Length: 166
Length: 278
Length: 103
Image (tube, rainbow over all chains, first blue to last red; front, side, top):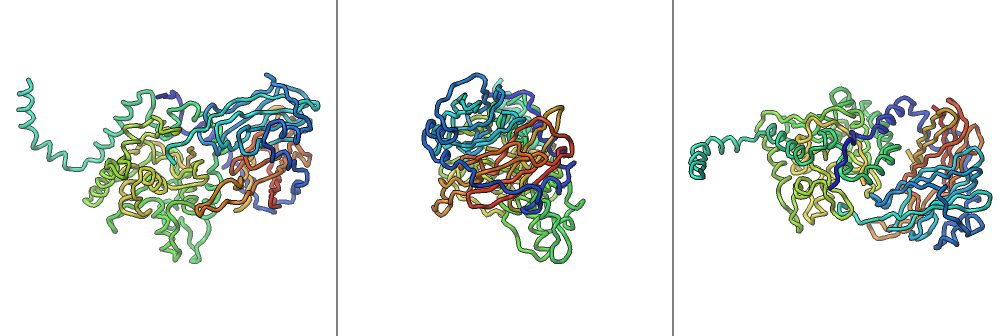
């Protein structure tokens, strides 16, 4: 049985968050639907739907990036847990040590569909994104980044176990 | 030596038995907290509100990432709006609670001398609704869990302070809750204590069993396996189902008394709900 | 209270970090309800982040993105008070937009 020393109550981050939430007014943080005309809805026709229904890594990459050639690279760093505490919410983040990254994707090989999410990264945006994905079972998770039409990736196995507590 | 001990035991057993039959919640709490502090010497008392995350680095790392933007934040915001929405009679929830309902969640469950029953925060919210001509809400999920989440968030960090007054009914409710906690039930024949005292910190398949100490402090909870918010009663029902026993009704005396006992054991720990768990 | 988006944006030095939590069921279409019926797929397809009206990130999401999605990223530039816009469209054509100022 593991005992972690020094885990403080809540996480310090949580307290910061609560303070931040209190400092910003609710109106600034939460806007109901249609309350703001500041941004138009994105164009749904740009969605790469084909990339999201593929069952292999190669077909997914081909549909998303137009190539399935991918090189494993230590310049792509991924943070993913060894064992997911719950397969429905698995924090995954990647950080690419590369210039001119234009796109990225997170793949879960043993999910019903391999593609979890993909990003278009314009100049000036850092190629490092954190998000939370669902994993249907224990699987390789792959972070792919696109640089100059070429793909680099890193992968890691994430175990998804059955919980005992419902 | 042994004979001498027995002789001594015989002479003092009568007053001891009498003392033991008198409920002594304060002594129980000291022993309860002391048990865990001795079992896990590296864990300070306040850390128990973090439940399973004291026992798995991988899980606590994931939790920290999830707490960057906690999934219960929508519930807190929705709960605040509901809490501040006027009833048709012009009053709000604030009219039913001391200090307008702000910073008082750590005092629940409370013993209500008028009815002779334990009142949880959820039941108090429903009483407020009925007093203002509104229907009761579900005690397990939904708007009531959201209102509880908001009210609890205003007590963040305050020491849990459940009071058991010198009232025979209050003491009886406490004793009934304690008995429920230690009684085995269901086809699996587990008590609450089987998992949360005896096996605390160990794994049940992929899940870490939270110690009973501090368990109530993070409720209401966003559990990833629920995909939304739930109250302590929702968890009681889930645990009963898991050991294949018949759950009680959400507003039953059994669950009120159990919440009373368990939360009293957490007295002095910092209120830290709403929380997030796998 | 439907379709909320919570956004925090903070600038430190040259970099603005954006965190967002988006209220959405993200139903995968693989899960059954209590009655045993498949819950139809319902998920965000495209989400766009803008800074002063210029796109700083486009996300393409599928059914494997978790319920109430969270995202964190950063971009160069941005200063306190600048507006960050967030908008999404899902597979049913529903949309939501919001904006928040960099803290």
